[in-house]
Length: 93
Length: 222
Image (cartoon, rainbow over all chains, first blue to last red; front, side, top):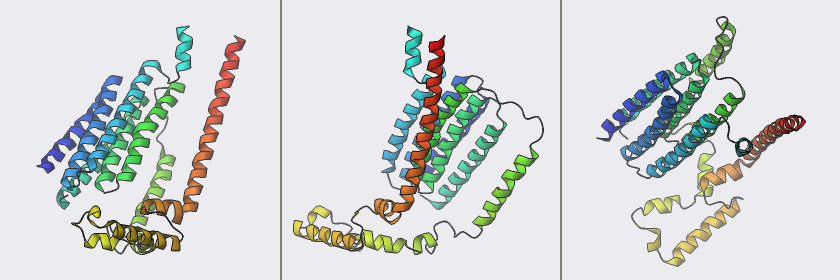
């Protein structure tokens, strides 16, 4: 059961990798990276249940949080081109 | 995990890693290459986690997929988004990369097998560290069903005193074994690593600061 889930996740990973490779626009690739992070979370959870150590779920939660923060940083960067607020403030003036 | 499932998963993850690496090498769009390095880090983290190294996996995911991606994007903002195609076939770089790689692969022939209980990592100093740091291991393992609270307070107090005495006797009063190894047995190694990282951080901060001040001066001049 969990082995089938693992196989499905690996297939989805391969598909996300193909999208990151082909994806014509920037956002296809960002979405592929985000999706890959989600697949990592799922793979950790399934691996935890396969080894009968469900405490891996805590690790999976941490990965999910980190993936979210990293994605916000990448999206912000792709919109503004930098991270600092000072230059945005200068433009606003 | 059933051994066959683990092996197949590891092989598939390594195959995906190889696909990602070749794609990164052939990619001319650097933005896409940065996204693919993030994917590479996630794959590496999955692989390490399945090999039962969750701490290394977490570092790989946090540094490789999180911080490194953002830093590389910052670098792209300062430079260009397209890589220039190479003017000739890179024979010298390939030779430089292949020879150390072959030496490393040759070196793995002498390494113990994965999970070998007689490997030096498990038999050299580790038993001593374990017995010094965790003196209660056998006692806990011999009563697996009983929760710790079921004992009377006196008993657990005496156990704790015993472990503290033994720790103090060997100069290590740290109850957690990983902390004990990192902070005490390998304290000088950890100190050296921390100094290196601290120095690198100060250097980068100084470089970035000089750049920003110069830009401010230029803008004021205008």
